[in-house]
Length: 282
Image (cartoon, rainbow, N blue to C red; front, side, top):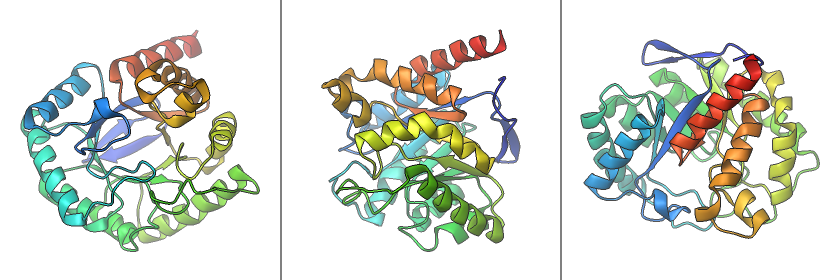
């Protein structure tokens, strides 16, 4: 797409071209995700969600078993693994070749998913802050790593987050961690600005407005704003009524350099990509 850098990542031995923005469908195998309609707990619900993501044009599936919404209950590593094993078995039975990322901040959980179920990407909301072994594990596994910006942990991150200069702090954060990952031999890194994580409403919109500043790091970016509070709190609604706002922000994110959209609503995000692509090539 015109205006996007020609990024590629090595996914299971095959190059994925990110110059064409990709849509990542969310598969929650949790009972307490912030968006209730996204929760999938039975085998039939999980299978149906996988089929829907792929049928609607999603090129990646992000599976998670630990809710990172503020104030969510903590989940043990054992319980997280049990939930993921159940979900991944169904996913792989239906779509053995699908590109799958696992949303976890625990190195042992990530290792299990890659080694036992062929998961190709690790998506870590904590940027290695919540498990000191995550970076070395990613290097050992040789898989792409989604590096997200967050301060604190999911239980406390929204307790008065403060930045003297949001983008400057994020650039320092990403710069330091990218260097650490490169020194360990990690080759494929995707940046996630972390919308909604340790950021106020104002921080989130400042970040969207200045997101192109992160392109100085010359790495692909993933954006996950789907049905988040930055939409429904601004509009005085709810996650269930935040689809239109999600599409607006996904459009802006693509125009500011996003390579991957992480979403609940795959069909609508694919349409956003198609429209923005048409606009930029004309």
